[in-house]
Image 1: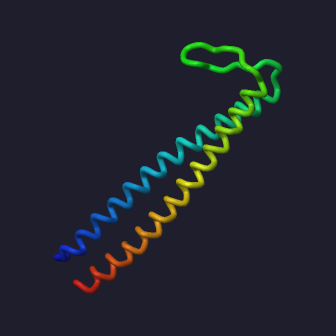
Image 2 (image 1 turned 90 degrees about the vertical axis):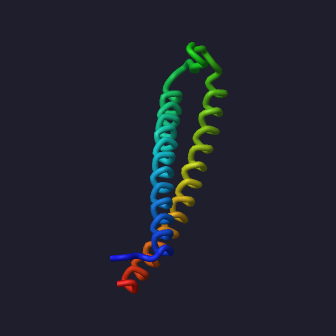
Length: 111
C-alpha cells in the first residue's frame, strides 16, 4: 500500500505529538513526586519542635515558620506547574486525536 507524501508528513507530525506527550508525562511525574515530598515535609514539620534545612551538603537549623512558608510556596508552584502541564497535555492529545482521524480517513481514501 502506497501512502501520499501529505499522509506521510501527517504521520510524522503525529509521531512528534506522541513524543511531546511522553515528555509531558515524564515532567508531570517529576513534579508530582516533588509535590508528594513537599507535602510530606509539611506534615512532618507540623509534628516537630525544631526545623532543619539541607543547604548544599550540610543540614542547618532554621526557623520553623519560615521553612513552612517556603514549603507552602513550593507546593503552590508545583501545583500550578502540574495544572499547566495537564492543560498542555490535553491540547496536544486533542491535536493528536484530530490528526489521527485525518490520517485514517486519508488512508481509507487512498486504498
